[in-house]
Picture 1 (cartoon, rainbow, N blue to C red):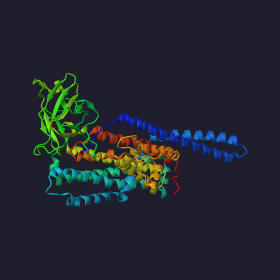
Picture 2: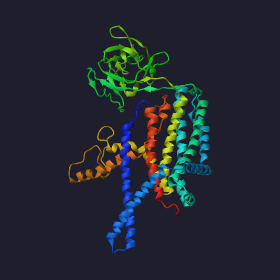
Picture 3: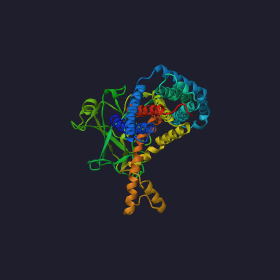
Length: 553
C-alpha cells in the first residue's frame, strides 16, 4: 500500500449522482415505453376502424395507449411492493436445486485442487513468514473471487432463457405467480448457491492460511486514523505541494532538510479512545527518503515530530529519530511532553484542541529530502483481529458476486443466454479495466487528461502519423472533427456512472498488508454500490420480463 490513499465515502455526493443517473435512465425508459404503447394501440385502432377515419383512430389509440401505460405502471409497482414471501421462497428453492443439478458445486473441487498444489509455488522456507503473509492472503482472496464469479455468471445469464426455451417457465406463470416474484426468486436462488460456495471457500481458505502460516492465527491488523496534509515551503510559506525530486510517481511530495519546509497533518476526532492500553497515542509512518549526497550511509535521514496547538500556539517537539526506509516506523507518544520553553504539557489536554491534533514533520538532515503523502503518517487505533478483517474482505467478494447476479439475471429477462453473457461480460471487463480510461475522456486537466482527441481526431492522427502531443493545425476541418468528437467523448466518459466499479469490492489490498478493512472507505462503499445497482436493475428487469412473451422459444 505504498501509493494507496483510502478516502472516506461521500455518501451525499454518491446519493446525488445516483439520483440524477437513475432519474435520467427511468425518464428515458418511461418515455420509450409510453411512445411504444401509444403507437401500438394507435395502429390497432387504425386497423379496426379503417383508414377512412384517421382522426378517430388516432384519438382512440392515444387514449387507449395512455390508459394501458398508466395501468401497466401501477400494476408493475404493485407487483414489486407486494410480493408473496412464500412464492418467492418456493422459486428460490427450485432455482437452488436446479443449480445443484447443473453441477455448480463442482467449483469446490477446482478450489480444493488449487489449494492442494498452491504450496508448491508459494512456499519459500528462506523467506520471513511475515513477508509471506501478503502473498498467501492475496492468493486465497483472489482464488475465491475468480472461481465463484464464472459459476454464478453462467447460472445467472443462462438460467432464465433456458427455462423459457424449455417452456418450463410457462407452467409457472399460469399459476398465481407474479413476474416480480420470478425475478427476485431467481436472484435469491443463484445467490443462495453462491453464498454456500463462498462460505465453504472462505472457511477452507482461512484454515489453509492458519495451517500454512501458523503465525496468522495470532496477528492483528492495524486500524489507521488518517488526517489531512498540507505543506510549507523552504521559507515557511504555505504551499499546495512539496518539491518534485523527479520521481515518476507523483503520489508523494518532498520537503527539504534543514529548512523551514514542513509537512503538516491535521487529525480529527482524537480522544482517549485512540490511546493504546498503556495510555499512549501511537503514530505510525512510512516516510520515504531521497538523498542528494551519500552522507552517512550507516545512518538514516533524521526527522522530527512537532505537536502544535494552533489556538494557544503551544508547541511540543518529540525526540528526533531516523526514518525506517522500506519499513513502517511506529512511535508511541506519551501524554507528558515538554514544550519549547521546557514547560511540561499534556498531549490530550494542552495539544489536542477540540478533538483536533496538528502534527508537523520536519527533515533535520542537510541536503536530504523526505517524501510524504496523506496516508504516510496516521494514528494507529486499537488493533483488530486478522480473522475479522479476512471475513470482511470475503463479505465484499460476496457483495460483488451478488451485484453480478442481479445484473446478469436482469439482462437475461429481455435477451437470450449468449447475448446476456456477452453484455454482462462487457460490463465486468469495463468495470475492472475500463473506468480509468473513461475518466480520462472527460478529465479537463491533470495527469488523467486524455491526449490525442476523440475517435475522429485519433483516426486522423494515426493515418498522418501525428504525435498525440502535437496540436492540430487550426482550420475548418479541425474544428469540425473536434466538434463531432466532443459529444462522443462526453457520452463515453459519463457512461462510467452506469458501470459498476469492481475495484470497490477488492479488499485484499488491506488484509494482505496488515490493515483492517475500514468501514468508511471499505465496507460502506461496497454496500452502497451494490444497493445502487440493485434497485434499478430489479425494476427494469421486472418490466422487461413482463413485456416478454414467455411461451415462445
